Figure: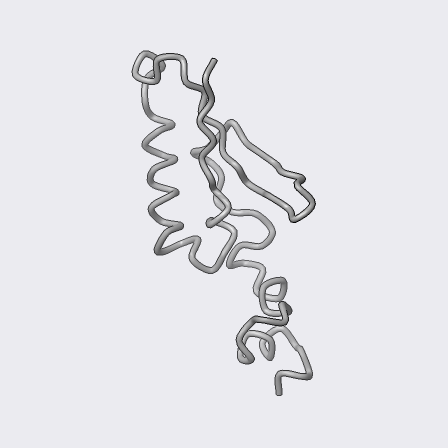
Length: 98
């Protein structure tokens, strides 16, 4: 059976609820509503995590994925990145950002 891997990782970023995240979420919802005969045997899987080590996580329930631990709700995890804007690092309590 052929597989289609839909990259859902942008839902884990600050763009998750808007921009590219919104388009990916709508695409996932639309694809999940297609009847099996429309897919002609294609299995759709969502990529939810891809680490620099090559480790990855997927989901078969693409319609319900809303973002993982690095999504907008986890501001501290994003803000502590060295490349994060100073204001975000300050919000996360980084003393070097003050």
